[in-house]
Amino acid sequence: MISDIELLNLLNTKPEAGLKVMMEKYMPLIYTIIFNKLSGIYSKEDIEECVSDVFLAIFQNRYRINLEKGSIKVFLAVVAKRKAIDLYRKNKNNNYIPLEDISEDLFCIENHVEASVVTKENNSILINAIKSLGEPDGEIIIRKYYLHQSSKDISKELGIKVNTIDKKVSRCMGKLKKLLGGII
Image (cartoon, rainbow, N blue to C red; front, side):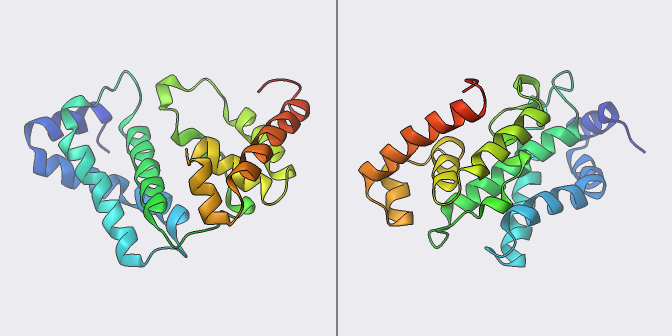
Protein backbone atom coordinates (compact mmCIF):
# COMPACT_ATOMS: atom_id res chain seq x y z
CA MET A 1 0.00 0.00 0.00
CA ILE A 2 1.34 3.40 -0.97
CA SER A 3 1.87 6.02 1.75
CA ASP A 4 0.54 9.57 1.55
CA ILE A 5 4.06 10.95 1.00
CA GLU A 6 4.69 8.52 -1.84
CA LEU A 7 1.29 9.26 -3.39
CA LEU A 8 1.83 13.01 -3.19
CA ASN A 9 5.30 12.64 -4.76
CA LEU A 10 3.81 10.52 -7.53
CA LEU A 11 1.05 13.09 -8.10
CA ASN A 12 3.66 15.83 -8.43
CA THR A 13 6.20 13.95 -10.55
CA LYS A 14 3.93 11.73 -12.65
CA PRO A 15 0.49 13.35 -12.34
CA GLU A 16 -1.47 10.87 -14.45
CA ALA A 17 -0.02 7.85 -12.67
CA GLY A 18 -0.56 9.50 -9.28
CA LEU A 19 -4.17 10.29 -10.15
CA LYS A 20 -4.75 6.70 -11.22
CA VAL A 21 -3.33 5.33 -7.95
CA MET A 22 -5.31 7.86 -5.90
CA MET A 23 -8.53 6.95 -7.70
CA GLU A 24 -7.95 3.23 -7.23
CA LYS A 25 -7.30 3.74 -3.53
CA TYR A 26 -10.02 6.28 -2.67
CA MET A 27 -12.79 5.93 -5.27
CA PRO A 28 -15.05 3.81 -3.01
CA LEU A 29 -14.74 6.31 -0.15
CA ILE A 30 -15.46 9.35 -2.33
CA TYR A 31 -18.33 7.65 -4.12
CA THR A 32 -19.90 6.64 -0.78
CA ILE A 33 -19.62 10.16 0.65
CA ILE A 34 -21.24 11.73 -2.39
CA PHE A 35 -23.83 8.97 -2.83
CA ASN A 36 -24.93 9.37 0.79
CA LYS A 37 -25.45 13.10 0.29
CA LEU A 38 -27.10 13.06 -3.14
CA SER A 39 -28.88 9.73 -3.64
CA GLY A 40 -32.58 10.18 -4.24
CA ILE A 41 -31.95 13.71 -5.47
CA TYR A 42 -29.58 13.15 -8.38
CA SER A 43 -29.09 10.37 -10.90
CA LYS A 44 -26.26 7.86 -10.77
CA GLU A 45 -24.60 9.72 -13.66
CA ASP A 46 -24.75 13.05 -11.77
CA ILE A 47 -23.23 11.40 -8.69
CA GLU A 48 -20.45 9.87 -10.79
CA GLU A 49 -19.78 13.26 -12.38
CA CYS A 50 -19.52 14.82 -8.93
CA VAL A 51 -17.02 12.10 -7.95
CA SER A 52 -15.00 12.93 -11.07
CA ASP A 53 -15.12 16.61 -10.15
CA VAL A 54 -13.56 15.78 -6.75
CA PHE A 55 -10.62 13.99 -8.33
CA LEU A 56 -10.23 16.75 -10.92
CA ALA A 57 -10.14 19.37 -8.16
CA ILE A 58 -7.49 17.39 -6.27
CA PHE A 59 -5.49 16.89 -9.46
CA GLN A 60 -5.61 20.61 -10.28
CA ASN A 61 -4.59 21.55 -6.73
CA ARG A 62 -2.07 18.78 -6.12
CA TYR A 63 0.75 21.25 -5.41
CA ARG A 64 -1.26 22.82 -2.61
CA ILE A 65 -1.75 19.60 -0.62
CA ASN A 66 0.00 19.91 2.72
CA LEU A 67 0.34 16.61 4.58
CA GLU A 68 1.18 18.46 7.80
CA LYS A 69 -2.44 19.65 7.86
CA GLY A 70 -4.02 16.24 7.27
CA SER A 71 -3.92 13.07 5.25
CA ILE A 72 -4.84 12.80 1.57
CA LYS A 73 -7.84 10.71 2.62
CA VAL A 74 -9.16 13.48 4.86
CA PHE A 75 -8.43 16.12 2.21
CA LEU A 76 -10.38 14.10 -0.38
CA ALA A 77 -13.27 13.54 2.04
CA VAL A 78 -13.57 17.26 2.77
CA VAL A 79 -13.51 18.15 -0.93
CA ALA A 80 -16.10 15.43 -1.65
CA LYS A 81 -18.44 16.73 1.05
CA ARG A 82 -18.09 20.30 -0.21
CA LYS A 83 -18.71 19.28 -3.84
CA ALA A 84 -21.79 17.30 -2.80
CA ILE A 85 -23.16 20.24 -0.81
CA ASP A 86 -22.48 22.60 -3.73
CA LEU A 87 -24.37 20.30 -6.09
CA TYR A 88 -27.17 19.91 -3.56
CA ARG A 89 -27.52 23.70 -3.32
CA LYS A 90 -27.77 24.01 -7.10
CA ASN A 91 -30.80 21.75 -7.24
CA LYS A 92 -33.74 24.12 -7.56
CA ASN A 93 -36.25 21.29 -7.08
CA ASN A 94 -34.95 20.41 -3.64
CA ASN A 95 -37.24 22.08 -1.13
CA TYR A 96 -36.75 19.85 1.88
CA ILE A 97 -33.96 18.62 4.12
CA PRO A 98 -35.26 15.76 6.26
CA LEU A 99 -33.97 16.18 9.81
CA GLU A 100 -33.36 12.44 10.10
CA ASP A 101 -30.83 12.74 7.25
CA ILE A 102 -28.70 15.28 9.11
CA SER A 103 -25.43 13.87 10.39
CA GLU A 104 -22.19 15.05 11.93
CA ASP A 105 -20.75 15.23 8.39
CA LEU A 106 -22.85 18.28 7.51
CA PHE A 107 -21.28 20.22 10.36
CA CYS A 108 -17.74 19.12 9.58
CA ILE A 109 -17.96 20.32 5.98
CA GLU A 110 -17.68 23.96 6.96
CA ASN A 111 -14.54 23.41 9.02
CA HIS A 112 -11.37 22.21 7.39
CA VAL A 113 -9.89 19.40 9.46
CA GLU A 114 -6.90 21.27 10.84
CA ALA A 115 -9.06 24.25 11.83
CA SER A 116 -11.82 22.20 13.43
CA VAL A 117 -12.26 22.89 17.11
CA VAL A 118 -15.60 21.18 17.64
CA THR A 119 -15.39 17.46 18.21
CA LYS A 120 -17.69 14.87 16.69
CA GLU A 121 -19.27 14.34 20.11
CA ASN A 122 -20.17 18.02 20.39
CA ASN A 123 -21.57 17.90 16.86
CA SER A 124 -23.75 14.99 17.89
CA ILE A 125 -25.12 16.97 20.85
CA LEU A 126 -25.79 19.96 18.57
CA ILE A 127 -27.53 17.77 15.98
CA ASN A 128 -29.78 16.25 18.62
CA ALA A 129 -30.65 19.72 19.92
CA ILE A 130 -31.50 20.94 16.41
CA LYS A 131 -33.59 17.82 15.72
CA SER A 132 -35.48 18.42 18.97
CA LEU A 133 -36.71 21.74 17.54
CA GLY A 134 -38.89 19.78 15.11
CA GLU A 135 -40.11 20.86 11.69
CA PRO A 136 -39.74 23.37 10.15
CA ASP A 137 -37.56 24.99 12.83
CA GLY A 138 -34.71 22.48 12.63
CA GLU A 139 -34.64 22.71 8.87
CA ILE A 140 -34.59 26.51 8.99
CA ILE A 141 -31.58 26.49 11.34
CA ILE A 142 -29.71 24.03 9.10
CA ARG A 143 -30.45 26.08 6.00
CA LYS A 144 -29.52 29.37 7.69
CA TYR A 145 -26.32 28.45 9.51
CA TYR A 146 -24.91 25.42 7.73
CA LEU A 147 -26.05 25.85 4.14
CA HIS A 148 -25.72 29.64 4.46
CA GLN A 149 -29.02 30.37 2.79
CA SER A 150 -30.56 33.80 3.18
CA SER A 151 -33.92 34.22 4.90
CA LYS A 152 -35.33 35.23 1.53
CA ASP A 153 -34.15 31.98 -0.11
CA ILE A 154 -35.44 29.90 2.79
CA SER A 155 -38.74 31.73 2.55
CA LYS A 156 -39.09 30.92 -1.15
CA GLU A 157 -38.19 27.26 -0.71
CA LEU A 158 -40.35 26.59 2.33
CA GLY A 159 -43.24 28.92 1.49
CA ILE A 160 -42.94 30.84 4.76
CA LYS A 161 -42.81 34.64 5.01
CA VAL A 162 -39.34 36.18 5.41
CA ASN A 163 -40.19 37.91 8.69
CA THR A 164 -41.54 34.61 10.03
CA ILE A 165 -38.25 32.92 9.10
CA ASP A 166 -36.31 35.63 10.96
CA LYS A 167 -38.53 35.31 14.05
CA LYS A 168 -38.19 31.52 14.02
CA VAL A 169 -34.40 31.79 13.74
CA SER A 170 -34.28 34.14 16.71
CA ARG A 171 -36.57 31.96 18.83
CA CYS A 172 -34.77 28.74 17.83
CA MET A 173 -31.39 30.18 18.73
CA GLY A 174 -32.80 31.05 22.15
CA LYS A 175 -34.14 27.50 22.54
CA LEU A 176 -30.79 26.05 21.46
CA LYS A 177 -28.94 28.23 23.98
CA LYS A 178 -31.14 26.87 26.74
CA LEU A 179 -30.83 23.28 25.53
CA LEU A 180 -27.04 23.54 25.24
CA GLY A 181 -26.50 25.50 28.44
CA GLY A 182 -25.59 28.81 26.81
CA ILE A 183 -22.85 27.35 24.57
CA ILE A 184 -24.19 28.96 21.38
